[in-house]
Structure formats: C-alpha cells, structure tokens
Length: 135
Ligand code: HEC
Image (tube, rainbow, N blue to C red; front, side):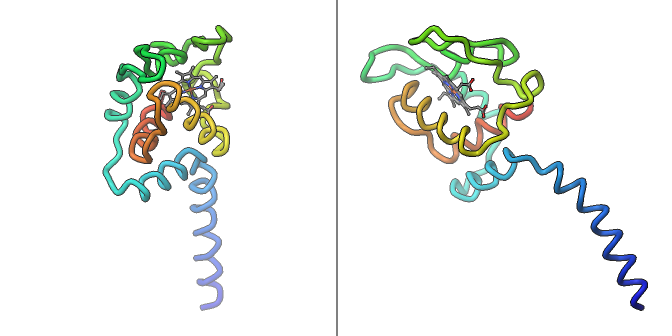
C-alpha cells in the first residue's frame, strides 16, 4: 500500500512538473483578469480592441494600440511622440514579451491612457493578452 502511494505521488509530480513549467506568467495574469471581469475572454475580441481606432479626447488625435506598436506585431514599432523604436510585440519573435507582470501592468496603464484617454478594463486587458500571447 505504501509503495502504491509512493508510485502515485511520484507519477503525479512527473505529470505536474511540465504543466507547472508551462503555465506562463501571462496565463496567470489572464486568469486574474478573467476573475475580475466575469466575462468570457477571447483572442478575437482582443484583436478587435487592439486595432480599434478612436479619437483621444485631450489630443484630438485618432489613436490605437497599433499607433506605436505598428500593424505587424512581428515588426519593430515606433513611439509616436518620442520616435523611439519599440521592439516587436509578438512573443514568437521576442521571447521577453509578456513575461513580467509588473511590466505588463505598468505599460497597460500608460498606454491605455495615452491611446484612449482612460485605463483599460480587466475585460479589455484579458482579451488583449489572449490575442497577444499567440502572436
Ligand atoms: C505612445 C506609444 C504607445 C502606444 C499608443 C501603445 N503602446 Fe504599448 N508600449 C509602448 C512602449 C514604449 C512600451 C515599453 C517598451 C517595450 O515594451 O518595448 C510598451 C509596452 C507595452 C506592453 C508590455 C509588453 C511586455 O513586454 O510585457 C503592453 C502589454 C502594451 N504595451 C500594451 C499596449 C496596449 C494595450 C495599447 C493600446 C491601448 C498600447 N500598448 C499602445 C508604447 C505604446
């Protein structure tokens, strides 16, 4: 009986280890936004929100997330005010993307305000991350 328990536990940890390793930072954050949001999140909605153009009230300019990050997420973008280059957003070409919660949250805050004149909601942030993580 003792042996069986041992085998069971060992077997389970071998199963669990890769699963845990794989559970990326971004998935935890999506889970968090999902709970705050209470809505079903989707990459499709995220893509629409990411590309949505709207007039930012204070500047009067039409802006979107693509204004700085560019139309192609695998390419380098450019900050519209400072003209500085922004590394590609797609995790498939830039492995550092979406790996640090603090960084993600800091830039969500700044960029949503800059592009839309307000903070993004948990639903918007969750949808956007669902979209971005598979790019
Ligand atoms: C004014 C230019 C600008 C706009 C517009 C902009 N961003 Fe960004 N974004 C940046 C800069 C600069 C960084 C930080 C530098 C970097 O990550 O290369 C960044 C980083 C990020 C990150 C962090 C990614 C990571 O590596 O973890 C997220 C998430 C993000 N932006 C989301 C958005 C969203 C959502 C929008 C639209 C609401 C948006 N951005 C619009 C300039 C912009």
